[in-house]
Every structure is written in structure tokens, then in C-alpha cells.
Amino acid sequence: MSKLKIFTTMFLIAIGQLIPTFNSYAMTTKEYFDQGLADGQQGNFTQAVSDFTKAIEIDPEYPNAYYDRGLAYYKLGDFDNAISDYTKAIEIKPNDALTYNNRGNALDGQGNFNQAILDYNKAIEINPNDPEVYNNRGFDYTKEKNFVQAIADLNKAIELDPRHVTAYVNRGIAFAKQNHFHRAINDLNVAINLDPNYGKAYSNRAVVYYHLNDYNKAWADVHKADELGAEVNQRFVQRLMESLGIGG
Image 1 (cartoon, rainbow, N blue to C red):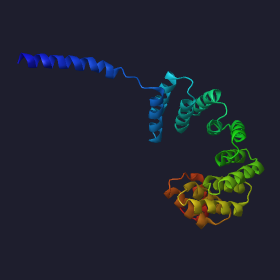
Image 2 (image 1 turned 180 degrees about the vertical axis):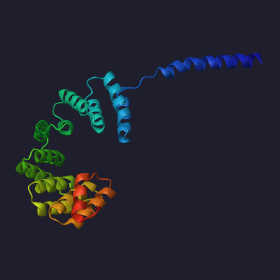
Image 3 (image 1 turned 135 degrees about the horizontal axis):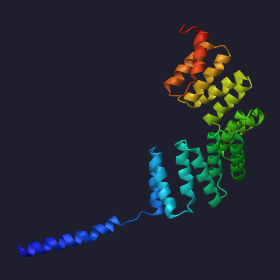
Image 4 (image 1 turned 120 degrees about the vertical axis):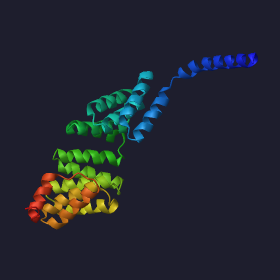
């Protein structure tokens, strides 16, 4: 019995000596960064921000951590912090086209379209073959009512990627803003053929059909957009219902 007690006591002491070793284990910058990526992929952007912040605390010059924390902030709608992180990433790594593109997206989220366009310009200067940047810049040119440049950029996006669904939708919007409704319908039809589940294409086509006085097709597209979870302007829906004589 005494030998057993001695063995048990020594075993517990050994375990006690090991516990501080396990508890004092510190995660590395890369481990926090990878954990942040995993959280972001699961849609847990708040936790991702926390993980990337810990990575940055260990290594304040780690550009990818700023980049991905900026993306997490962007997903949370925190455009100010997203811009701050992208700016820091650019300071550390000044020739990364994706960072300029993403900062442009965050500036767009603030409604700062002119500054966003400058960032897209820089992204294109670094990498002139990314269709996404032309698409983004084209959409902001549409918001700025510079339709000539908008169409040129969206044409380029489609040239680089003939299956770029969003570029067809955005070009359709740009045509519609100029009252080129039939050209808009053509682009929106292409987008829907490429991706029949892209709700934004239906919601925008509904508006174009409305302007063409084709209220039944507009109403069908409104229902399809709603079915796919796309946001539809309720004031537009009310006008359409009045045109159709629905709801008194």
C-alpha cells in the first residue's frame, strides 16, 4: 500500500508539473492568422477580427493580417476600420492590387465613389487583367453618371471574363440609366442564363420591364427576385402593383 501511495503521489506531482507547460503554450502569428481565416470562412467575422488582431499584436508588420482583418471589418459593415486596415496593409506591401481593390470597395461602401475609383485605378495599374476591378470601377462610374467610362469598363470586364455575371448586370443597369432599355434587357437576360439563381438580375430586369410598360413580366421578375432572397425596392413594387391594378 505504501508503494502505491508513493507512486500515486509522484504521478500527481508529475501531472502538476506538466499542466503549467500546457497552459503557457502561446499561439504563433500564423496560428492566429489561420484561425482567423477559418472563422471568416464560417461567417464568424467578429471572432475573425479578434484572431487577426492577436496576430497583429504579435507581428505588427504582417500585411496579410491587416488585409484579412480589413475584409472581416468590411463584411461587418465597418468601413472605417476596413479602410484603416487596408491602408496599413498598403504601407507594408504597396504593390498589391487586391488590397487597392478592396479598399476601393470599402470606400464605395461609404459612398466615396471618387476616391474608390482612384483605388481601382491603382489596382488596374498594378494588374490590368483582373475583370473584377473593371467591374467595380464601372459600377462606380455608373453611380457618378459617367456612363461612357462605365460601359467601357464593363465591356473590358466581360472581355476578360465572358461569364462575369455581375458585369452583365451592371452593364444592364448602366444601359437602363441611359434609357437604353432593350440593351439592358439583353444584358440581364445573359446574366440570368449564366446564373438562373442570381436574384439581383431579376430585380433589375423587373425595373426595366416596368419602364417598357411590360408590367406582367416585371411582376413575374419581382416574385422571382423575392423567391431568391434579393432585395426589391418596396416603393417600386407599390408603383408596379398600382399599374397592374393590384391591391386597390
